Image 1 (cartoon, rainbow, N blue to C red):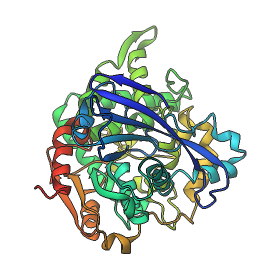
Image 2: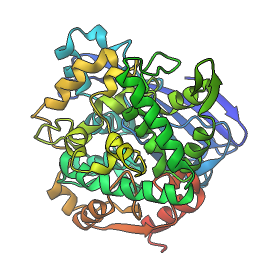
Image 3: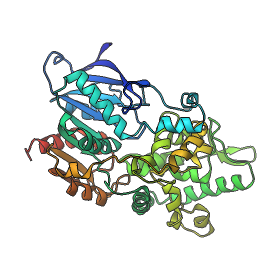
Image 4: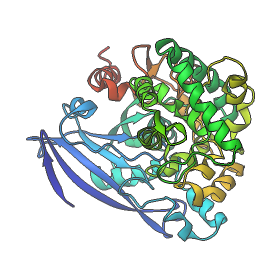
Length: 437
């Protein structure tokens, strides 16, 4: 266990040995890493613990370099534990290099099925007992998918929790993947409309790039990214993931500004642009996001690549159709499509396993509606009005189904409100769970 200091904080490394399958505690083990963070000068104090669950799936915990962001507010009250959820960061990795070592696609899919919220929660419970003792309880902060995990925690092991705070992560308890995406595409349409209102010059810029990519595809000479991945028009459209964050629309606009350079045969897409696109689109650092994304909605039924199935119901996302007229080409949002496993080198070796996971029909439930209806743990949730990633109506349905859950519905932030103004967002939720507001 190593300890090191950064300005205003003391950080301690922890590694825990946990079962791959919690139903078989004597079976295979994996490692889960977590970083303890405490305010400098308060290392010896008996502070309450706050577990942070990152968004994703597949996102590692933050890497603090100082007392800054939302942890600065948290450290006023807590000793914080930043968990690298299983398969991410410094925990036993699950990626294109390691998963094929499990064997064929069936073995790989069986292995990856152990990386959902229910397993993450059971890891957290083992860690809680190791750090706090059997009767110790800790607070929980869940961002986005971390909020989904918080609902699973309240369903499986509420006795380990003293209070829960959720930001942009109240999942629809009974909503399947197809319902989730039927609600999502209209929200993404609205984000596109706003983007083009803010940057009207980008209508022509996006159309020009999309037309170029379509011509290249039809000619059998697709555009390649620096890592060898394919930049198809559909991949280009998936840059719309940026439209759901506070700074994302500006990031997309500035990326488009660098699109073209003079080439030997006329204008061509610049290396700067292609490198910037790759940085946004590659799953090399978080492959579990793509592999498991739809499974976070799987409960007793196949997800079946729901985002791809539903997309055809929303013709404004058909780039070829838009280019036939004068309509803007719309970007997509937080959708994972099966073709991504053929365009991104980080995903290619996991393609067959991903298809098996998408067709799996016996996903166990992630939430216990009866237990949530009897909840006694104080819960407060920031619900962002018209959140592109999580449907507001679904979130409010869930809020009504969880006893004692209080919501703060606000249109001041996008999905990344915790990152944009952590002091205000977290401070408000702390006051809510304590009954101060």
